[in-house]
Every structure is written in structure tokens, then in C-alpha cells.
Image: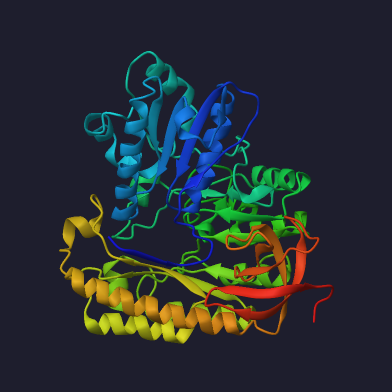
Length: 480
């Protein structure tokens, strides 16, 4: 499957994590797919640190190799299989090295990994990471180890993640796990289980700890953050039958945003991912109320055709999505918006495709994640809908969508030229060791000369020029 991403942050790339804490055994861990997988890898590193492992970037010296996998698209699975071939080559020279597969792909394929991929010693699903010590004992005793049982309660809220990414500046904070939305194309409900929310006090504790350690920005994570609802634990409760006390004491996502932003007013707050059917107006008002909540929303639409949205079992129509966009612009006029779009879904006609293009023309997204449909085994679409769109048609439609998004990205980025924006320095620019790279509150990447600034500084940057996705500027001492 072909995949197109228009985003300077390159979220689809593998992240090799490293930390040192004095342990003697070495863990090499790679993550693929969504931000939740990268966050989960930090949880895994924390659990294994107590088992004597510190992480390394050098594959050849690892005692344990783990790959945290994604099943949302076929391309991600093929990438993992290629990595397993690489591990196999290394393992021939280091037979004591153990290899495990984590995450969604592990849950979906289960024991097939142990049968087909002879290199794999351990298969662990997203809800089973606390069982890693027991599974490692099985592996060290010469036995294969599998645990892919889905949980209705596990949120890992009691584990302090080992912060392995973000350059000590940005961090992920998981607030929900699983998903109850049965989109016909998606495997997430089958690989990550039912939706459950994390105790807000444990979230606040983690955020406050990050602030004390000097982190400047957090992203609240979930498959569907807007459906966050804490009433006391576990799965979301049916409030039709709940007591008034339970209703009164529940915490929803808008309230959680307000709590976090109030607790740390000098820390930037982001969140991802939102589902159009669950985003409510009070979330937008929480964003508008707090200057430290970034004016950026990732709002997947998937298709601009109401007919296709119904086939996808998305719980919004084209008209409802546009109404939500209008409400966002009414409450937060300068809010940046990004999208997910799938083209070539079964039965998609040229008219459906044109409706997607016309929706893009209406919104003019800042950037997007665009994919050709690939059938995922076990989903409703795979069981009930024929993958009937020819590959050449999918490719042509994807090209048209990507080309239009490139034009819109350039349009949005050019609007910042001449303005002065606050930029959080995250790292050195990939293209020049004389420049810093950071993001504005609108999630746009900005590059500017280093001067005497350092990673973690908030700098006012005068935008002088831009590419289609990156702002180019110079630091100034004041906001214009």
C-alpha cells in the first residue's frame, strides 16, 4: 500500500529510543505507527528498567530486541517484517539475543509470529506489558511466550514512563486506551480493546512531574481523546442508568483540558486524536479560555462523501463535519486543522472522490495524512465489502488529494509570513547545524538561526519566508 504524509514531524518514521540508568542488560526498542505506540514504548522501557535493562541505539549489542508494531495499514506490517529479517541476520551472530513483537500487530497475528517468524521469541499485546517480566522468564527458560489478552481496565496510569523521546522538551501523556467506534476499515477495536479512561488525578500527577523536570509541552493521547470520561474507573458507564452522583462527579475531556491547563499555565498543551462525532463545543471553549492550549486540532474526516462515511460506519455526515469546522472557526478563529483521508474505499465513485476534494477546498487543511485503502483482515469492510477500486484508480485519486493538500499547506503556511510567532525549540535542524527547529502553537515547524538560544527555549520568531510546510525566520526580542 502506498502512503503519503504531509508533515515535517515525520510521525510515521521509526523511533529508536535510548536511555541509561545503570542497568547491565541492553534493550533495543523500535516503534512504528501512531503516537500511542511511541508512548507505549516508554511504558515498556520503564517496566523493563526494573528488570535490569537500559536501552541502546546499537542493535548488535542488544540482549533484548523489541519492535512495537502497527496494524492500521498493510505498509506498516510489511515494514515490520523487513525489520524482523534484519534482526534475524544479527541474531545469527548473537544467538543469545531475544526478540519480541509488541503492539497491535502482535495482538492481531498472535502465535503466527512464533510459527512463521522463527526469530520471534515473544509476542505481547498492548494490554499485557506488565506481564513482560513473567514472559521474559519463559523466554530465558527456552520457551516461547505469548500474552495478547485484552483488558477492560488497564490504563498503565500507575507506571511512570521512561522519557526516551522529545529531547527533554516534549512528552506524551496517555489519557485513554482502546476504542469503541467500530469503523469498518479499522483494526484498533480488535487490537486495543474497549475504550477506557485514566484517572484524572494520575494524569495531573504525571503532568506536574514533567513540569518539575523542565518539560515545556505535553500531548494528551488517546485513540479518541474527546470521548474521555472518568466516572471512577474502567469502561465508560451508561449514564442513562447511572445515579445523579455519578453524573455530577464525572470528568469529561473539556474538564480534563481545563484542569491540566490550569495546573501548568506555562506548559503548552496539545491533544490527539479527535473524532468529529465526539468533539463538543465545551472542548473548544476550554481551548479558547487557555492561552497555553495550542490552537491546533487533528480532526480526521476520512471522506468528504456522506455515502462513503456511512459505509465506513463513521458517525458523522459531511454536513455535520462542516458544521463542526464552522464552530471551531467561530470560537477559535485562527485554529489550525489537519486531516486523515482514505481514498479508494470500496464502492467509492468519482462523485464520492470529488466530494472529498471539494471538502478539502472548503477547509483548506494545514496538513494531512492521506492513504490508499488497504483491506485489513478481521475488519467489517474486509468481511462484507469487496475491495473493488482498481489500484491505478486509487493511485490517481491519492495523487490528486496529495497535490491539493500540498497547495493548501502552502496557502496556510504563507499566511504566517511577516508575522512574529512563539516557537518552542525542540532540536537542531536536520538540514543545518547552525539552525534550530521548533513548532509554533499551530503545529507548524519553524527553522531559524541558533544565536544564543538552546533546546527548550520559547522564542519569538519573525517569519520571513516559508516552504510548503516550514516557516523560515529570525529570532526577535518582542512580539509584533
